[in-house]
Amino acid sequence: MSEGHLSLFYRELEAGRLTGSKCKACGEVFVPSRPLCSRCGGETETISLKGEGTVESFTVIHVPPVFLKDASPYILALVRLEEGALVMGRLIGYDPNKPEEVEIGVKVKFEALKEKHGEKEEAIVAFKP
Amino acid sequence: MLAEGVYIVGAGMTAFSAKLHANKTGRELLVEASQEAVKSVDKGIMLHKDVEALFIGYFTPEYYEHQSHIGPLAATWLGLTPKPAFRTEIACASSSAALFAGVTAVASGLYDVVLVAGVEKMTSLETERVTEALALASDDLSESKVGATFPGLYALLAQAYFRRYGVTWEQLQRVPIKNHYNGSLNPKAHFQQTIGQIAEKVGKKLGVQYKDELDFLKNSPFNRVVAYPLRLFDCCPISDGAAVAILASGRAARRFTDTPLRLLGVGLGTDNVALQDRADLTSLVATRNAAEAAYRTAGISPKDLDVVEVHDCFTIAEWLAVEDLGLVGRGEAPRAYEEGLTGIEGEIPVNTDGGLKAKGHPVGATGIGMLNEVWHQLRGTAGRRQIKNKAEIGLVHNVGGSGASAAVFIFGR
Image (cartoon, rainbow over all chains, first blue to last red; front, side, top):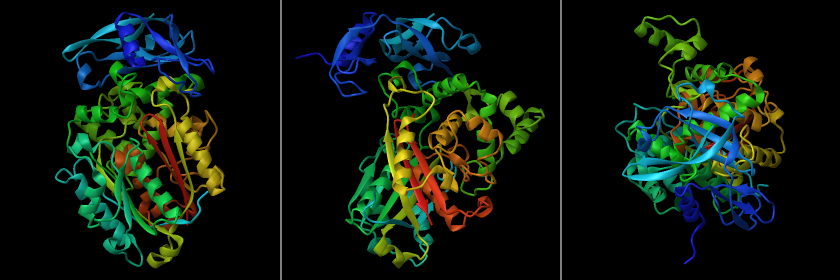
């Protein structure tokens, strides 16, 4: 039995590593890893990502989903990795009540954030300055 | 290209509301909207005798009503069994998928008369559960799990837009101010008060006087932040409602009316569900592709439009829509709104019914709800919100989720 791309992605994430897929045909990089390129349909190879990038957009969630009731407010960001992929993650290291202090374009680094989701603890993609 | 002509011979909808339908189910809302559609057919129609198939958009009945298999259920409640019936789903554009199914069924020559509808009975759940239901339209793994909500996704688009074009949240407030004004003219709208009227009411309660509508939106604690920079009045409400349209082929249409609307153009668009897989955060590619296809099939350009319904689930979505539909150029929405281009009396009225913001957004009903507005504007029955210029061509633009699905339909008299 071979492992699915997402199973691998989340197993790596739990271990603190960020993986993606690079298209063998067009070179586009995606996170999470996936079997086919979402741009051209080409076959991909799994790559490890350095986890360095810049914030392209961010928001502060004040009305969260039920499972994150106790975590709000929190900051979400879309980060452009050096390898080219855009990734959504939690932005930590800023005060969510001072969004004016977050700058689009700021350099950030990946971190796997362990968070309680109901009964279980899960790793999610996060970034910090 | 449409092989055969497709005509709209009737349209109806319930009011969109969070209160009016508290004691009704989705199936009953469908019946109510259908009865109004029947009444709108100039020469009369008997659904049971005339309708050959039905297509129903409903985003998440499993969540709201513990119910799937909506097509046959609707057939039962409309007295249409054993006509072919199924449900369509592309999130907030689910009834546009039903309309598309109806259009292709008639254009192919397979059926002469079909009923298309949309419904969402949302207020059966608490707001936080509704938020969860809506989040099903985003990428569960890459977005919801990280903590994204729908307002959050559009907030990310808004921030990227603000940054790219150097505009502010204050400028964006022309969208809800316009749409609430339009809603105040629409007896079926969820909110029928202008923001000025709401400001006065809230001000009285708090013992504050607001200078103007923007002052209220900016400084009232009532307009709390939902997902920075978007606040409560940047978001559409949670509504119950249903909307119906009756489609007919060219050979059948004249049996029902001498003044049907004709479908001129149609286009669908798809993009990656997750924002992180998108090529551009300041535009919805699905809308651009759907619009391009719709204009091409209709053989018209945006300049030919008289009235436009766009998907303003959040304020920023209306700006993206008017740009992606080509009503104005990229980055030009802020100025167009400053100049009042899209007001009821403007050059190209947008969301004369109040839009999703004021009319309401019972998700699955929205697309055909928009068609109802174009039906009235083109037939001159829009009442106090009837546009002043002659309405010959109208466009409906409906988006699924944060922009992974889009549908555009163009109708003429």
